[in-house]
Length: 271
Image 1 (tube, rainbow, N blue to C red):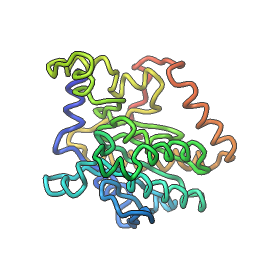
Image 2 (cartoon, rainbow, N blue to C red):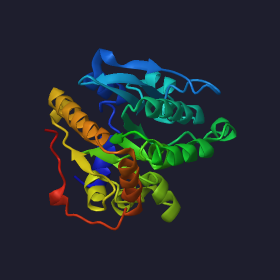
Image 3 (cartoon, rainbow, N blue to C red):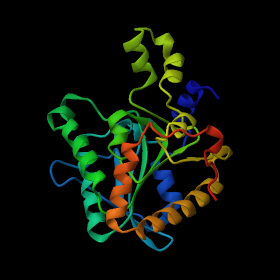
Image 4 (tube, helix red, strand yellow):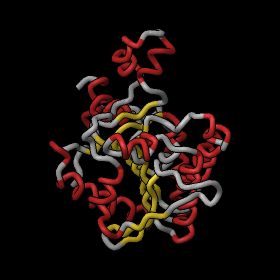
C-alpha cells in the first residue's frame, strides 16, 4: 500500500475507534471518569480505570465517534484543553497508585478553535508532554488510526509507542503539508510519502517499537492478541525500578532518529 492509501485506511468510517478497543480489551471492568476539575468534561477524551487480566490500569483514549451524531458529540476526536487536562489528571492519579497508563490515540489533531486557544490549548499539551516524561508509572501508547501533530503527541510520550499496521503518525496532515509547501491540494499523495508517516516508515526511524498486524475486518483475534501483549508489556515495565523506567523513557526520546532498523525487522505479530 502507498502512504496515501494508508492515510485513507486510517480515516475509514468503519475503522474501530478507541471505545471499540476499550470494550474488547477491558470489557465490563472499565469505569469511566469525567472532567478536568477546572472547566468541564471533553467527550473527545474517554478515560477511566479498568482491569487487564486482573491488573488495575488507567485507560485513556481519543474518541472520534462512529457516525455523524457521535462524531459531532466527540468533536471528531479533536480534543479541547480540558480533555488533555482530564487525561493528565487521570495519569497523576495512576502515578499515585502505580497503575500503568494505556493510551489509544486517534485524532487528526487538537482542536484549534478560538475557545480552545483562550483556555490554553498549547499550555495543556505542553504540560502533558512535560508530566508524562517524568510520570512514575509505566505508559504505553497505541496509535489506532490517525496520529496528528501535538494533539496525538500529548498522549504519546510513553515508554513504548505502538501503531496499527494502517495507522499514520505525523507532525501535520498531508493536506496541510501540500498546502504549505506547494499550495496545491493535488500534491497530497506526494506529501504523504515525504512525511514518512506510515508505521513501516516510523519503525525504521525508531519512532515506534511495534507494528500491530490488522487481521481482515479487525476480528477478535486482533483484540485477544493485543490484550495479552499489552498485559505482558506493562507487567514487565512494572518490575523495573522507577529510576530505570524514567531513564529509559528519557533516553528513548533522546535517541529518536539515531537508530535505524530495516522494515523486515519490525515485529508485527500480537502473540
